[in-house]
Every structure is written in C-alpha cells, then in structure tokens.
Length: 629
Image 1 (cartoon, one colour):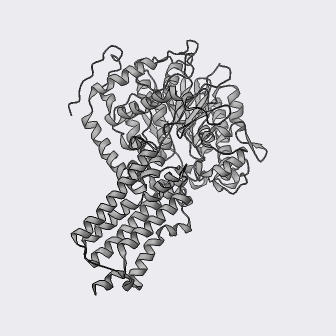
Image 2: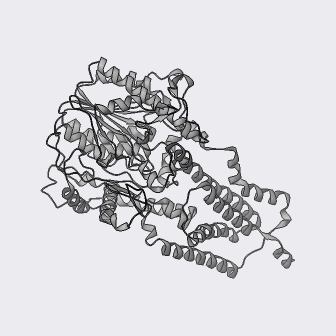
Image 3: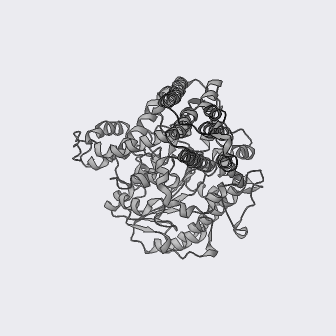
C-alpha cells in the first residue's frame, strides 16, 4: 500500500511545477525583461522555484484534506499576484509594490483604464489552478498523499534553501549590491523573482515605516551642506520679472514632448502649442521625473523640489509629513493658492496632501457642473473644465497661484467622434493610435482657455506655465512608436521619450527656446525666482532653469540621468549625438550626484526630516535637534 502511494503524483510537486513554468512563461511573454547572457536566462528560469517550494511545502505538515485545500487556495492567490503584476505592467511598465496597493481608493475612478488592460485570454493565467482543481475533483486517484517524516521535510526545505542561496549567489555575481538597487524593480525581479521581490518589498515597507520614529534631526546636516554647495543664484535679468503676477500652472496629462511641432496624418498635433511656444520660453530638454505616483508625483516634484519615492506615491504614503512647498511659501508672500481638478477630491489622496502642501482651496468635483454630455473617459472634458475654471479664477483674491490638472488625454485615450480634430494614427497598436486625437483635443482646450483668459482680463496679469506630467506611451508600445518616429526605440531613445514640454509665458517677454537640460524638480525655484522670492535657505534639489551658471543635468526616478552630452540608463552610457553606447567613464562624474540626490530626498521623506528644519536659520545653524519620538 505504501509503495502504491509513491506511484502517484505528488500534489505538492504538480502545483510547484505548474506555477513555476507559468511564471517563467509570463516572464518571457508578459514582461519586457532584458536578458544579456545565458547566466541571466538561468537565473530568470530558476528564481521562482525556491519560493514556490517553500510556500507549497508548508502543506507537508498538513493532513490530506487540509493539504489539498491549502494548495488550491495558495495556487489561486499566487496566480492572482502574478496576474496583478501583468496587468499593472501593461500600462506602467513596472511591478507592483506594497505602497501602490495602499492606493486602492483610486480603483473606483479607474473605470475604463482597467478594463482596457484586461483580455479574455487572461484566463490562461489561472489555467494551472483550474487543472489542479479538475484533477482533484475528477481524477483524485492520480494524485497521491503521504505523511512526511521530519527527515523528509528537513531534506525538502534544505533543498529549497540551497536553491535560494544558489540563485542569490548567481544574481550577486551578475549584479553586485543587487539588494541596494530598490528603485530598479526590473533588476530585482529578473534576479530574485516576482514572489521573492514582493517579500523583499514587504521588508522595505516595514523598514520605511520605522524610519520616521527613528529619525534624528542631525541627519539634515549632510543634506543641508549638499544643498548649500549646489545652490545656484538666480539670473539677475529674470529675478522678480513676474513679481506680483498671478501664476497659472497647467499640468498637461500624459503629454510627451515628441508631439510638439509634429504631425499625424498630415495634420499638426499641437497647432496652438506650436504657436504659443513662439511667444514663450520653451524648454525642449525638459524631463518628467515621476515614479509609481504618476500625476501625483509630478505635483509633488513641482511643489516641493524633492524627488518622489521609488515605491508608491508620496501623496499616499507620507501625506502627513512636514513640507515647505510652493503654496505654503506663496501664502506667506500674499498669494491665494488653489488647485483645480474636476475629479473626486480623494483621488491620489489630494484632499489630505494639499493641506500638507499649504493649498488654501481645492476646487474639485462638487465645484463643477459635470454631466454625461461634457464628460469622457476619466471625467470632465478639458474644454469645459477650463471654461468653468475661469469663473473660479475671476473670484479668487489676487494675486493667486493656481494649478490646473487636465484629464482628457489620459489612458486609454477615449474621445467622442465629434471631439476629434485629427484622425487616429494607423498602426496595430490601439493605444498609440488613439493618443494623437486626445493630445490634439487638449491642445484645442488650451487655445480656448487662453482666449478666455484674454477676454476676462486675466492674461496680461498672469504668468502661464504649461508642463507635461508624465509619459503617455509606455515602453510596451515601442514597436508602434518606432513605426511613428521612424527609428528603433532603444533604451537611449526610450529615455529621450521621457521629455515633456515646459512652456513659460511671461507677459512682455519675447519667446525663446532654451536647450538646457532640466526636470520637474527645477520648477519650484524657477517659479519663486520669477516672482522675486529668494530660495537660498530652502532645501531644494532643483535649481532655477534660467540661472546662468546652471548645470545641464536631470535625474530620473529609476536612477537614469541626462547631461548635456550623455544619457545614462540601464547601466549604459550613451552619446546624445549618435545615440550609441560609449565609454562609461564619460558618465562617471555624475554617478555620485545622481545617487546622492535620490538618497538624500528619500531620507527627507521617509524620516519626515523637514519637521526639524528652520529655514530662517538654516544657513547659520548647523546643529539640528534630535527627535523626541
């Protein structure tokens, strides 16, 4: 009888092998994981195994009925985790983190964006679970059960641990200091696997939760010294040039710079912006620096001159921190500060975060007349949004600082036929095809907005700043993008596609294209200097884009960076002129600066260090208090 049991297949082994092979297939078909050599392929193939052996091996301590139930439930849960990563990756080209899961309050507003990402064929991601369930139901005699001895279990788990250490050893050989690169999730998944990555992410989350309580104000000393050493004085010709003017800041949803001065189907994509640029300052080497928080990250960058986190969105994870944001500073300088966005006030936790940033008023969904006929996709159409918002501007105390967040040009880029000013692009990629009409619609909305500002007498008394918040087309659409642009989308080209428009219109100033390399983190000091407000005591990692001594430099949240002559991404240094890899030593002078800025900014956020900071005495006082917590 005992020998007969051994002739049956083990449910533990079957479940492990099925999920192991499914995970590897998902790696190769659903994720764009770069493999450079045979060792990396072995690591990729092997990395799910140790986790699956352990998680299913727990059932070896159970009786037959409990074991089968546990394995079925575990198989479904692990499959769901894998599938959630697949769906998330389809748009964000990234893997889930625990802080992102805290953002579930956003899910009710995602609507068509989520349904667009899910296909009927996705049922295959649960095929192994269905096979197991059928085998247990229809052919139970094919699957054996035995009571494992202590020796059996010890040997089993020793093998699992040995595989885990062998995996980690190979991974460390391929990429030394692997576990310190927490911002590079593709690198982590490629080397330690999706499931082990989530365990490591849980460890990081518990670690970050403890950082605030353990924070010591003295940690600010090195950060303060770094910021002081890199402070750039404003351009004397530009400092205070917009003193007393209103500020109208427009976050252009998903707008990348490649659409500027380009056509689709023979028609201009952004005819208004193309003209507006001629009478404004246009920064054509300006990059978004967002992470998983997307639009909320761009808001955080612009208002704080701090980098977003590599995991999750600061708007959710650290909304209770102390900040010295642009709205708070402008409140102290006689400005009325407001954000305008025709969406639920709780989306991205804005109602809470805006209080921390110092906004005096948030014009959200209840402040707009939103109907089915003036909505599409994520909500109110941009044309109607801007038209109704002008009435709010007219009622605001002057001068005001107002931030607008558009919606129409949002994935999955839906638009009614009557709102199309250009026809979709024609490729095999629906997302890329539909992107151009929604960009064109946003452009028309901006044109009508500017006209309305002129009619209401607000135009000449305001500086108008338009910027793209993050990419609209992810790397998952590189084939269609390569077709449109007429070139292969290499890692270099992909980094260059992270450029977003920045247009600064100042009444009375002539238009000029400025090629300096910069990013969203530079907007805070730039805006304050234009308004004649000094920033030398602020902790800002950005610098004035108009400064004569400015260094051409921008760091992206994934650790990539761009200089005047080079782009560094995915461990490769590229020449900007040729787009080809070059000697890594050309990028080495900037390695420490990129690393320091990201790490210092993270320390500020995780430790809530600005609660210890007195900006009035910052340049004199170098002794910081310790936390009483």
